[in-house]
Length: 283
Ligand SMILES: [Zn+2]
Image (cartoon, rainbow, N blue to C red; front, side, top):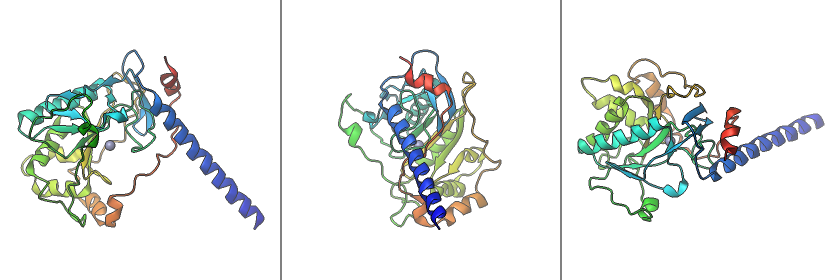
């Protein structure tokens, strides 16, 4: 009995230590205010990596505006910056609305003190489903950038979409987002994936890149492939063949409804590639 208790105490201790390690690391990374100089490089994995030579996404561009800028998470590899600018322009040209851009990565990537376990190496971005028809006119320090909200696209019971908010414009935006080059995958709520599976006709090839995932009912999450210049970028396992409108989606839809919207939890401790130390501590 005694040894069992000591084992338990030991395990709890190790768990606490690991947790503390993780949050300490996240605090360090989140207080770095500027990217490193030099060539942009994506290092490690999306949920255990960092970003050298990060590029800042301008706060305002054709068809998009960055929101919640106080979080200082508007840095990415140039491929991600180009991607967002291209999607903004295309959404604007096609009359889909103006995009609110949420988190990319911190100036040097790395774990975040709150909000995500991925977004660590400059190839992830959150784009809100809140599409605005009028151009986005924020002043640089407009409080609206911080306060603006994005509603859930799900109904109140969270059993399907809220059709007073969801529109074919959203589906077209996801199609354009999935068709741009360099996209690896896009995460949306399972109910949104189901809607696309039901409604997209003719060319459904792009549906493969749209992946069901927890949450993601008020924004979609775009992940790019590892850029060619970044040999230390670890590419995620490739997505299965097919349009994904199959048992894998039914599995998600069978989950208890609250499971589709878990409470955000502290990021798990991550082991970063050694190269990230140099990124964190560079002048
Ligand atoms: Zn995200």
